[in-house]
Length: 321
Image 1 (tube, rainbow, N blue to C red):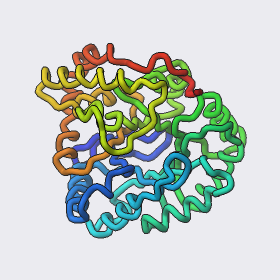
Image 2 (image 1 turned 135 degrees about the vertical axis):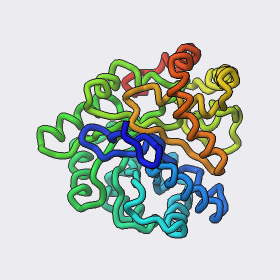
Image 3 (image 1 turned 30 degrees about the horizontal axis):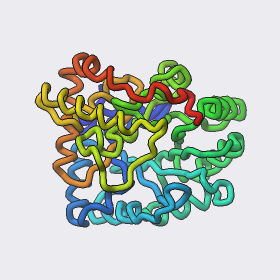
């Protein structure tokens, strides 16, 4: 497996760019550090080969919180002295207020807030009402032609809509989605490993970008997070908390941390292109980096121990509610 600074890299989907196996997310992250600590953490991440950063402007729908985390990320990049070529910027396009707020407007605002002229990839966010797939694909491709980013993925789309997007893009000679950012963890597996998304991964149409791998920190040992965390599809959070106790036992048996076990689980899935996690302290980053060796040395034993913790089997595998 190819590596950069000791960090494995994998393609972000068919024909996509090589990206670091680990990526740092931005939600409730950069604004929980002092500027000095954030610069130290960013420099260490890049030195370790962690060069994908998932950064968004949280301002719509359930994320209408006007966080400054994306602005702070841009400030930290400049303070750390990073060149634009040193990192992969994965942005977000939201569907909550689309098309009233166009993709062109969203990208202009997002890039200005970060202080750069382009992203490398974007994730087109999830939705609550039926989307206009053909318009979405067309508008995404307009932004690609404008040089705003090169490739794109989807976030928790209903499988039928994803299939329509892939088919429409192919028929029209447009760039289709090449990766799916899904909630994927020890407890949440049904969409990623179910009969709708799994064929896209196994047949090489998409890569999997694993997000919310700690369930807001619960699987890493913080069973009752005080900060806002992600949605709870299927209402299984109590079962996730129960699973966290077993994860802690598995971690202890392997002289590891719960966070390392949670990440290592994701690494055992060959469909995973990269794993996203948030850190706000340097020691968290250092701890997480060790998950690669844990997966390499104890993969089969971990999978056996963690398989019974699959908690979301009752949800719709196609992503519908």
